[in-house]
Amino acid sequence: MANLKSLAKDTAIYGLSSIVGRFLNYLLVPLYTHYMPKDSGDYGISTNMYAYTALILVILTFGMETTLFRFANDERFKPDTVFSTAIVGITALTGLFVMLIFAFITPISEAIGYAQHPEYILMMTIVVALDAMQALPFSYLRFQKRAVRFASLKMLFVVLNIGLNLLYFVVLGKTSVFYVFFINLLCTGFITFFFLPDLFRIDFFFNRWLFKRMVSYSWPILILGIAGILNQVADKIIFPLVYPYESQANIQLGIYGSCVKIAMIMAMITQAFRYAYEPIVFAKNKDADKTEYYATAMKFFLIFTLLAFLCVMGWMPLLQYIIGADYREGLGVVPIVMAAEIMMGIYFNLSFWYKLIDKTVYGAWFSLAGCFVLFAVNIIFIPRFSYWACAWGGVAGYGTAMVLSYIVGQKMNPIPYPLKDLCLYVVFTGCLFGLMQISKDWPMIGSLAFNTLLIAIFVAYIIKRDLPLSSLPVIGKYFRK
Image 1 (spheres, rainbow, N blue to C red):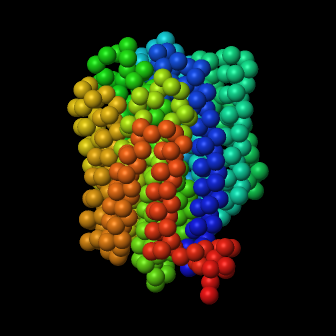
Image 2 (image 1 turned 60 degrees about the horizontal axis):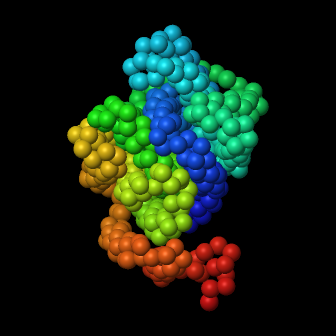
Image 3 (image 1 turned 45 degrees about the horizontal axis):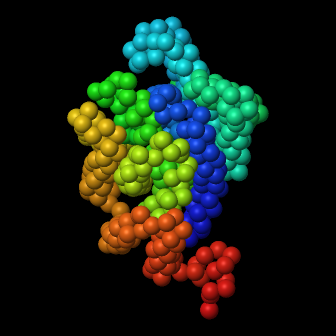
């Protein structure tokens, strides 16, 4: 119970920084979709470029975030030695990447469609390099249970980013996508300086033998990570390459990219849960009740992601105003993308069985299978169904990886997940979502009231079945007999 309370507390802190940060970043969506008209295609360019940087960031970090937790919890090694060995390796890889991009910027910019704007690529190269350099210090903060400092730095970046965007777009009238990338570069560079005091306190030592072992552990995680991030961003990379109407590609991608922002609340919850859960899992691996703990954590993860799904869909009449009116024609993809994100979260929870027994190669194969399905769906169906193929491709890709991980995991390292309870929650959520469609064409106030009632029914079901009020912190004492 103590570990679950710790998980809940840390998830709340990480979640606050993640959810509040993403919510504040949502303020940039109406800003961008108002100042960058749909027909300019600028928002599509931004969506496409950030998809590339997300993929590159996974490659540059080389799976070392998870590897850091694995080896820092090994009593044979000092945590500072593990951290310093990992960051030296990542620094070398990142430096090589930056040199290659600057050396071959012309052919690279031509190959991905930015021959007229190589500066976009150069700026985002520096951004992703700095992000890679920050990834391990942020992970070390998680290992050290310094959740407040972690959250503070994340929030500082968000506040600074929003402030500069408002200055450039609203006050100075600089509305080109160029300034989106330029502001990101300024903010990322600024945050980097805050890690210097922590880095100077560490006695850096590169252990070559340890590094070889870490790389041996992390390369399958790298493959897993590449496949995993491709499941998230491949559609945004593939879309301009296969959409049959080149002049409309960035416009359609902009519509899809803006609507997906609403669905990303599910990614926020998964990320917050991951930040808190990952360090605990490796520490918990020595305990006798670990499988029961993992099964319980899975159950509550699914419950609260389903609640988030209902909240987003129920309050869509209001949330739709996050994006500009010209972009709202793509809102139909939101529930599909959110369903895919739930599957991704389940897959993340299922993934620990092979990480804990050092069989991370399984994760690589599962993610590659899911990635193959996603690629196939996008390449085959985007020319005909536009961004709808992107949304369903995510469901197909994550669904494939999720099912494979569960089937093999139950044979290799079985965990008694409460499948009956999980299925009941999924079916109940589906029924409530179906009822929400009744109010789809009602006036906003009536629709919000009806949908909120349905959400309250779901919450009441959770409380009655799995989370009695007496078990809650603070207010629980008023419900105890």
